Length: 178
Image (cartoon, rainbow, N blue to C red; front, side, top):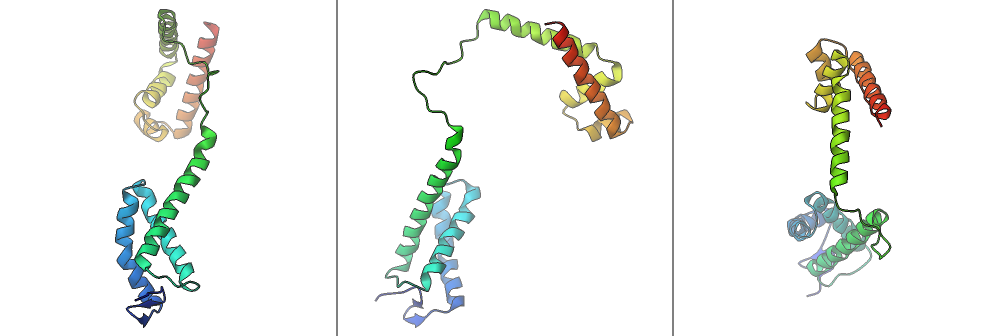
């Protein structure tokens, strides 16, 4: 027996039957996509298949609706991968023989890194006490400006000003010692 999207079990299909039919196949579609894409994409892909099926139901006769919907799912998945590849391709640099790879960490680079670290620590230690406290709480204790304001008993705007002063002071000290 040949089924069309408009008929189920030989009876004409109305809009509520379409909802029943798609509800019956949605879990299988979700399982199909869940094995192939990130869980956050599954519902969108299922919806894309069902919208496509809904558009076709009025124009075409479908011999095997379940086969049709999974063929559509496969095509939707291929389109998803194609769009995703195109979307992220601008962030990809092809590897060819002309790319210089970074050199290995040499003893000289290690020594320079240690010197930079010591200069940064010295610049932080030379901050005025309140600016140093705000800087340390924000950068090392990962507190928000609001939390620092509450901790220090000052306004959030005062914390912003202290952080600005601290950053300017550290930058000036690092530049001067270069």
